[in-house]
Amino acid sequence: RGQDYRPIEVVVVDDGSTDGTLGVITAWATRNQSGDFAVHVLHQDNRGVDAARNAGLQIASGEFIQFLDSDDLMHSAKLTHSVSAMSDGDVDVVVCRHRQFRETNELSAVLRAEPEREAYAKDPERRPFVVRMGWDLWVPLFRRTLVSRVGPCLEGARAGGTFGYTTRLKLFST
Image (cartoon, rainbow, N blue to C red; front, side, top):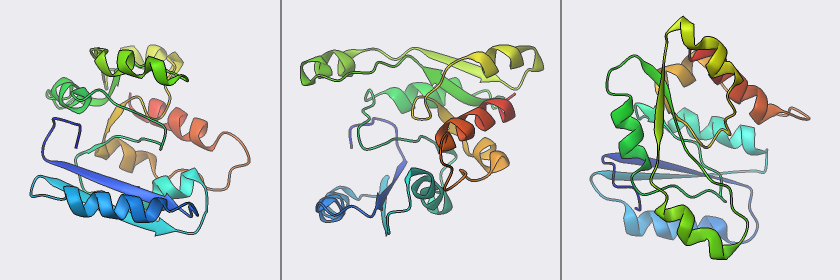
């Protein structure tokens, strides 16, 4: 419930965890579900991150897609700022500043960081820049129409499944 953007839909895919995660997330979903905050919890046998993303995409219904993994955090206004940057309708992807951290004592600095935003329109003049810039899949907010054009993540790839998917999103966003 930490995001200030509403309405919001959260899709959580438990990819075969054995540590009680499903029970914790189901209880959280029950406590936090409300009219403008929809939560969907899916459980599947362990099939990997790309299969989990595909399962989540199949039931997500929002106009925008934000990928997150279990170890990711977002600034509370990240979605509000990103959606605002997409307001002209000609933007498929919004990328913001991000920080990677490993130590717990860095957490407060990450949460206080004000998000910067850059919107990448479909303008062909921007293609070389968009393709070269570095993204992790969890950094940008994507318009659903872009994700639909790209199609599903490649499941079972020995290496580079997420990298390949991110690259396809970059190429299709221009």
